[in-house]
Image 1 (cartoon, rainbow, N blue to C red):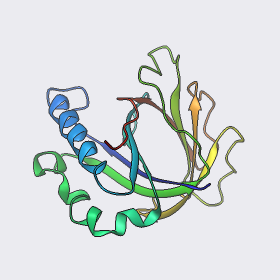
Image 2: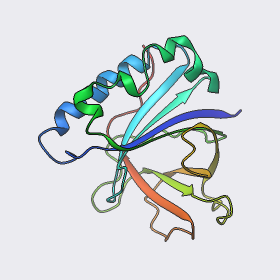
Image 3: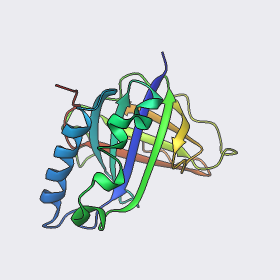
Length: 184
């Protein structure tokens, strides 16, 4: 069975500052709202272990690719659903719609400690279609919509990936900010 994922990445300048708690509170409420929209099956939010241009990642599993085109989503969500106080500060905001046989991408909270122990979500992005193929350890996700900022995404749950990225690729390890959430 093919899985459909909506993945949103961004940076927020107060990553370690006083505005972080307010931003995280907004995002928790935002996820709760999204999970009331028919077709949103689960959500989990992550933070990159390394310094990155977009250290936050939200992963939503969808029933199908059309969920984001339906009025139930378009009238309540999207960029303009973010309050201006946060939206004007969010940077490097990329949204990609992906599909593939990825299985469970849930990462148990508490993984990816400072010493690199525990499970994390590792994301390997092929930035160019001519980049080397994904390693066997990664499930391949095809980009099927939205910003299309990458050529292909590989994902895996396990120990942090410590090998160098192949040419024309990036590798990032994400720790969960909360447990996988489902509607209801």
